[in-house]
Image (cartoon, rainbow, N blue to C red; front, top):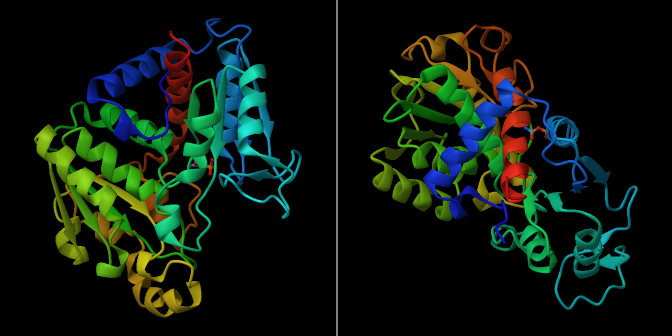
Amino acid sequence: MQHFLSTVDWTRDQLDSLLNLAADLKKEPIRDDLRGKSIAMLFLNPSLRTRTSFELGMQQLGGIAIVLQPGKDAWGVEFEPGAVMNGEAEEHISEVAGVLSRYCDLIALRAFPLFEDWEVDREDAVIRALARYSTVPVVNMETIVHPCQELALMMTLKEKLGTVQNRKFLLTWTWHPRPLNTAVANSALLIASKFGMDVTLLCPEEAYRLDSQFESAAAQFAEESGGSFRVMHDIDDAYSEVDVVYAKSWGALPYYGRPEEEWALRQKYRNFMVDETKMALTNNALFSHCLPLRRNVKATDGVMNADYCVALDEAENRLHVQKAIMLNLLGH
Ligand code: CP
């Protein structure tokens, strides 16, 4: 049984198949293939796009989606193996996964890292525990990676650029008032390198480098796909002649769990906001972001309102790629 936990576990051919199916679904959105099928969606964190697109997508395929928010409208869940459960959680993931597997055909989970200890969070243990105990396929709706967002990004780039091989992809860190999850940044590196793009990671200084497991994977994928991967800290050099600017903010991993200390570092880098002057350095690049985005903090109104901004296309494509993922995992 195959899960959709990370694109690292999926070959380029498999990902291409998902993207081709998503393109078909975009042309013919209403189908009946999943009549009688269901997905349970566990949200430990808020969402607008992920929840809407999965619920709608399952309905458009003839099935139903059930949203559960453990700790709010469902019992709190303990994920730690062997835990003595005398805290807030009322049930263990082993029973949650077992029960939902009896009811539903797919289980999806959003579980952001806890921002206490990166050495713990980098193992992605929560979704791996769900996958261990589930007897139906599990879908990652964002943990320390966001594979659904990756596919939506790549679908959008292929639609706009045609071929993406050796097109220049800039992932830029942006200013934000607090340290955010690295998931989308990790994922952007994985998918762009897997599809043969020339990838630059721009971040203000070494403290904002991404976890070595993702930078190493990007370097390896780039070697296999004929792309490239490099890290830069100079804004003008990094933007020069790129074809795609992809923005995301994230917390400095050496300060993980210590946001007050990180603030002293972060506040120096407000100049990393994406603006029209930086975009003018590019090769008429596309701009995108996973959303939500704080306007005039991460990117200016001018960038967000420009014709080259494809963030809404990427958000729409979440719907199509997730329908493809659900169909694929259920054998279609
Ligand atoms: N990009 C994304 O996952 O959006 P939501 O957090 O609104 O689901």
